[in-house]
Length: 319
Image (cartoon, rainbow, N blue to C red; front, side, top):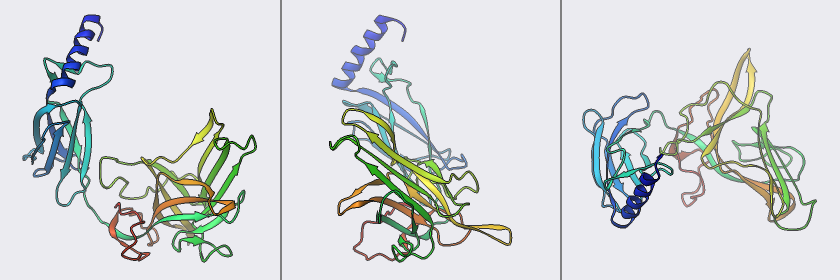
């Protein structure tokens, strides 16, 4: 907005909208992952502070909602249909630095919001665990068996290493609580193993890729925090909005590469172990497909091959 008077008018309108609300209208266009319109999808939509509306998309995958916002500037919606994963998201009506209200209405008036429903394709049983891994020591690599969920011998009961992990930490500058350095490296146990960092589809109940890629893997995940009480010198952390696709146990059989595939959810937590001042600990939520060369990453959400007790709610239930 170039003119000062126009900006002041918008500020007045925005203030009025906060007090008495502003009208809003939007049309949803629901499509599948191939871009085809999805008819008969159930939509529940609500302008902030309003009672909301429910309905179904028509033959062209369209559904229009109209209402009024009260003390807010958003439109939240949930979309469901049998055979698809739920989509849930929020559309921001107000955008900082732009004039978004005119004559008591949010503009643009009646935008078309493209909403994708991801199909339920081929969900399978997988080994799924949220593992609290306690390191036997620091500053050296220890090999971990994801299929067993333990360190490889002699540090645990594991047989075949999928990943190698090393934890490093120091408080060399001072003894203050917020003055420290810590690092976690997770690397493939074999030369051809690796990881790919991917951003989750945060709007879908199924947030990851359906299949692991065939190429593009990097040898390691490297996380670190180096800070003083007043300054963060370096920080590289694992975000909950991301995840890692991995391939492990990679070997050549008659010249053909054979691997196992899976995914590690973002938000990897690590640090000093409370009961072990020598080593450290890391928490990994991972999914392991037990079938060699099957790149399917779509967990069925219920058949955990670790067979946890029915009272165990610690393992991830996301597909």
